Length: 221
Image 1 (cartoon, rainbow, N blue to C red):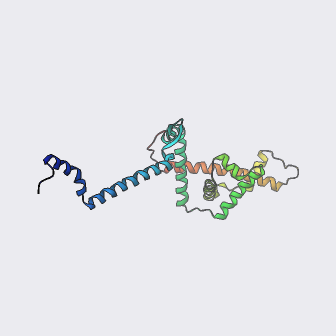
Image 2: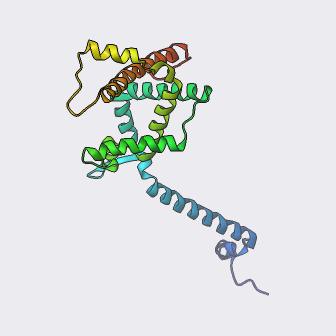
Image 3: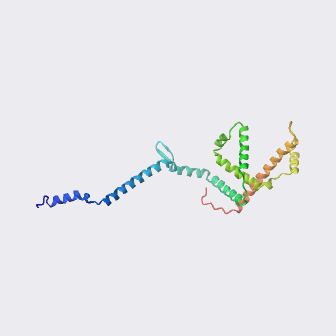
C-alpha cells in the first residue's frame, strides 16, 4: 500500500503521537509523584501558617521581627540572671532529690491557701496576684513545693529556743501591745527569728552547693 506520508511528515506524526506510547505504569508513577509533591507543598504551607510564631514574633507594616532577635535581645539584657537562676534551681532540685525530701499534696495545698488568704486580706484575688507576677498556678505550685522541701531539709537549722525569744524581746525592748498577750508576742518573735535563721541557712546551703558542684558555662553573658 502506498505510504500516505513522506519521510518528514512521518517524523512529525511520530513526534506528536509518541506520548500515546508511554506505558500505563509510567503514567501512574508520574501521577503519584505529582500528588505527593502537591501534598508536601500543602503540608508546608499549613505548618508554616500555624507555626509562624516559632519563627516570627511580630510584623510591622509587613516587615517581620524574628523570634530569634527577641531571644537575642533578652539574652543580652538578662541572660546571665536567667542562667544563674536555672543553675540554682537545678542544684536545689538535685540536692532535694538526693536527700529524698518530699512535700505532700495536703502540705502544698495548705501553703497555697495561706498565700491566697493573705492576698484576699489585702483586697485582691489569687488569680489577680498571679497575673501581676506573670506567674501561672502551675508555676506557683512548683515554687511552693520547692520551698516546702527546702524548709524540711533545713528545719533543724531554723529552730528557735525560748531563751532566744526572751533575749530578742529584751534586746529590742519590745512591749506587749494593748489587747495582746505575752504568748502572742513570743510567737511573733519566734517567727521573726525563725525567718532570719531560715534565710541564713538557705544562703549558706546554696553557697555550699555551688562551691561543690561541677558547673560548666558554655555561654558567657
